[in-house]
Length: 246
View (cartoon, rainbow, N blue to C red):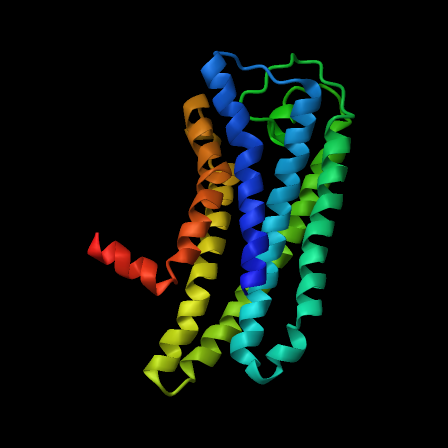
């Protein structure tokens, strides 16, 4: 689990570092400019790190499933080699996905100005600048990525159905609490990740405005990766005791 947490921490750090420093620099220098290559790099890194994070959260759900539902096989199924392979698959698959999205997005002719109505470059805002039918290729890629995310979500839900069924069969209350304590941080991180993105991309157009879009973007691009370390560190007994004393 701590191996996967290390990977998750690196991804969270990368997501925040992709968007926040440039935004802060622009605020301090009173400009909203970003180079074309800088914009492409931002899109690539954001999609890459975001996809890697959700892939890793899916792998972590499997890790919790094996730990609780098949504990006697945990050492075999989740050995160090298997963990490295799963993490590598999460990073590698996300890299290919980001490469395809970035190459496809920046091959589309942009003929409606060069003003991205956001504090960082993201694909939906760039597609708004296109007036060519070729943007439909990117829409197809987005639909494919959304279907993969949907499959991962179903896998996470099914894993937790099995986990909670197994936990409720544990006879001792102490055993149930211990099992739940290993799952709740992961479940909280997944819920925060999914809920913020669903709200960002599925909110009704009637409540959309530049100010609202900015708040929602901060909500899904900055808040989850910032809170994830805090959520997981709350499992640490010393930290909880310190917070109680404060």
